[in-house]
Structures are given as C-alpha cells and as structure tokens.
Length: 345
Image 1: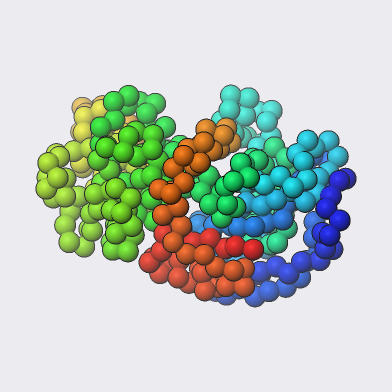
Image 2: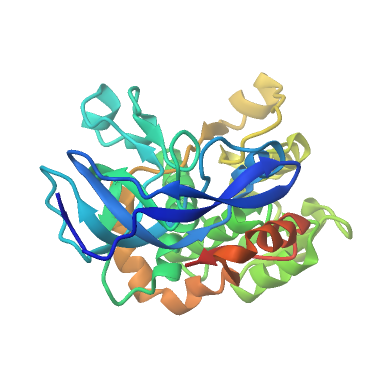
C-alpha cells in the first residue's frame, strides 16, 4: 500500500444517533485494501435523502456526496496519491448485464451505497473502491466538485431520460425547487439551451427566488396554480415535467399540464401516481419514466460542463458549514430556506 505518511490512526466522526441529534465520537481511520483508495474528505453536500438518518439514526457515518483527495491506495490501484476527485454513490460491480452496458445506476450486484451501507463523507477519511472514484481537474474547488454528483448528475440524467422519448423539447416544468429541482433547472438550461422556458413550482419563496435568479419562471403554489402561471407566460402546456418532490399532488399537477407526446419523469422517491390509462397515457401518447441517480460515465460528461458553467452552477450552493456544525446545517436545511448546503473539512 502506498500512502501519505501523516495519515493518523484515529479520527473524530459525527454520530447520527437519531431524533435529529448528532453527537461526536472516535473511530479508527480505515485502511484501504486491494483495489481501494483512502480519501481525505474535503467536502460533502447535504441531501434530502439523509432525512431518515438524521431523524432515525445511522449505524454508519452518513454522507453520499463526497469530494476529497487520495491519501492512500491499496494494491492493484492506479490512482496517484494526491489526486482530487469525487465519489459515485453506488459501488457497481462492473460485470452484470447493466454495468456492461453502462447502466451502473442499475447494477444488480452492488457492493455498497456509500454513506448508507458503508461509512461516507462526514468522516474526515473514507475508503472507497477505486472504480467509483472520479478524478477531477485540480482547478475545481473541492466544495464545488460536489456539484458533479446529485446536482449535475441526477439533474442531467432526468433530462436525458426525457430526451429518450421526446426529441424536440421546447418547455420544461420542474416540480419542487429544492437542491435536486435546482439541479434539474440548471441542467435543463445547460443541455437544452438557456433560452428554453423552465417553470419551477414550490411553496418556499427562498428557493423560488434562487430559481428565478438562475433563469426559471417561478410558481409559488400558495398564490396561483401551475396552469395559471403557464397561461400568464403565454403557454398552455409543457413538453416535459420532472418531479423532484415525490408528492402525489405535484405529479398530478404536472400531468394536468403535460402536452401531447409529453413526458413525466419521476425523480423524487415517495408517494404514488394515479393514472387514467386512456386519457392520461394512450390518447395523448404521454410517457411516464423513472430516473434513479445517474450513471458513472455521466460524471465525465458533466465535468467539462462544470468547468465552463462554474459561476452559474455555484449559485446552487448557498450555505457552507464546518464539520462541527452539522447539527446546525441540517436544522437549517430541513427548514427549507437554503439551496445546496455543504459541509467543508
């Protein structure tokens, strides 16, 4: 094993003990085995999917949007010590039918979900298999590097899913203006063109203001319906609706304003979607698709886009906290008046 000599043997880690409380403890610094890398974590972004760990507790150290620097490497690895990069959440096998076709987010033999099944990015060090590490341009700040993950990755994947069945997208509706919704907005602008109208609906004015700053047409559902907002902007319907809320009412509202040949992409996990097959699907030839995370190779596709659109994408990160302020960070994040929140180490 090769390593930087000043890696400590023990580290302080946050303990997610449940009931919305975080304590602190100590753990050995993990040692990378064959094919593994030890990262010194520099940043990890908060995510709505952390909610159950914050409120119900976790047996591992959470954090699944991590960036860091390689400080040790096990046998059989090729990544140089000192390489900066980000971690793909799903430790895919590389051998199953899905992986061989590039669908690494649909691996049938996953070895880990970092931050959920194995300790993740809120500890100062984490071990990952080399195949899920993506080396980044050293000019990218490691906090901003986390944008490559759930923001650009998940957001861009949802747009690409829609493009599979709709080749001439001219309008987009995003349901939910949380960090993933803002990521969908950003990637819609980057991938489809900054002139394309993107409507985004939510109840949180802070996030709607941020979305408007990023070029969206905001719709505060406390004041008006999405149908009213579309009509005011001169539209009757939208080609693509992407639900990041996971809420039944949001999905149904999106379906009601979907144009013929329109696509509803469901990104947010949660509640159900009820359909009248004849009127909702068959007659208008609507498509309803799921979109789960993204594929590893998409990090490489998005990497130059982050470099060329850094100032635009940076707007999504609204708050930064030290690792000793995770409690405060989560409390603020779940109140809703934030964009993306990042823990820096």
